[in-house]
Length: 227
Ligand code: BTN
Image (cartoon, rainbow, N blue to C red; front, side, top):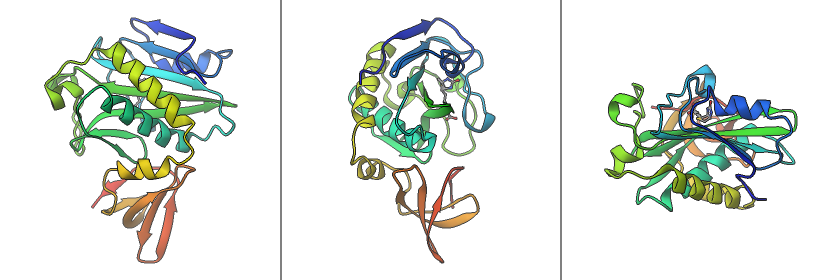
């Protein structure tokens, strides 16, 4: 399954996820990407700051057998982390459920949305943002590849590297251990959806596994707060 074809590119658009959702006859693997977004969407109704030419903002349209957004958010996070690492000499971690971290700071995020049998995987990555371009975040402060490495990475080779890594990751069967190896905060105490426990890992359907005083518990979706 070739990802990234056909593709639509925009100098500026409201949201690549919005365009992808409206592109009803797009085949599996189609791509929408933009140099800037005026209404970039984040998880839980948040916005995603998308200044012109500074980041990678794209959405893939998939038609998988099971369009489970929670599972694909983790697969996409793993693929994006691998794609970044094959271009940049930086350690990239995944924070359940959708954050991409570098040195404990958030450099990117995934927003999966479904419509019938179609699954939209939206990826936002801060590439050449300076601190002033980024939102204030109380924990896991925002950063960019430039701020973490001191280097400017051109967005197109980065996009192609991430697409190749996503293609390999989406078809990998034994991906869970790889995700857990680069999972932020595994083994630490955290709280999610009112459940307090030690972060133990993930399930292949995207759920988080916590070891609690009452035994193992699974969390379907939500925020993960480290204590
Ligand atoms: C998050 O961390 O909250 C997820 C952010 C996802 C942002 C990307 S940018 C490209 C795509 N289009 C959107 O409107 N959102 C996603």
